Image (cartoon, rainbow, N blue to C red; front, top):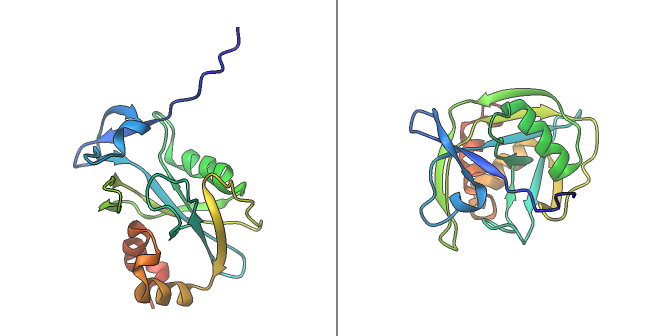
Length: 179
C-alpha cells in the first residue's frame, strides 16, 4: 500500500558552537521557546547585478508579508548545505541557481515575531547567481522584485520594519552591500 502520510520535516539542533546535537520536527522548534537550530539564507543575483528579494506569503508562520532575502530554509538531517540551498531555490522559486558561495559562514540571530514565535538560528548566508526568472510557490512567496544593491541598502536602512529581522542584520554585515 502506498504511504500517503504527509512528510514531517526535521531540523538539525545545534549547540552554541554550531555542533550538531540532534534533530527535532520543524513544527516543534518554532515557538515561544525555540531551540537553537541550523538554517541558511541566500541572496540570488542576476546578470545585471541586481539582487532578488521576496515577500513572504501571508500564510507563513513567522513574519508573514514582510520582504526578505531571495530564499531561506533549513537543511534536512544529513543534507549538505549547498544541496539544501538548491533544493529551496527550486521549491520556493522554481529557480535554478549557480555559483553558490558562502558569504557569512558564522551568521547567527535570535528574533521574536509579533505573534511571540522565536527564531533562534545559526544561519550561514550564501550568494548565488541565476539567468532565469523566478516562478514563486504561492505558499512561500507572495511577491518578488529584482533590485539594485544601493536601493536595497537604502530601503533597509530607512524602513527596517518592512524587512525580516535576519535580512536587516545580514545586509549590514554582507560585504556585497557595503558602500
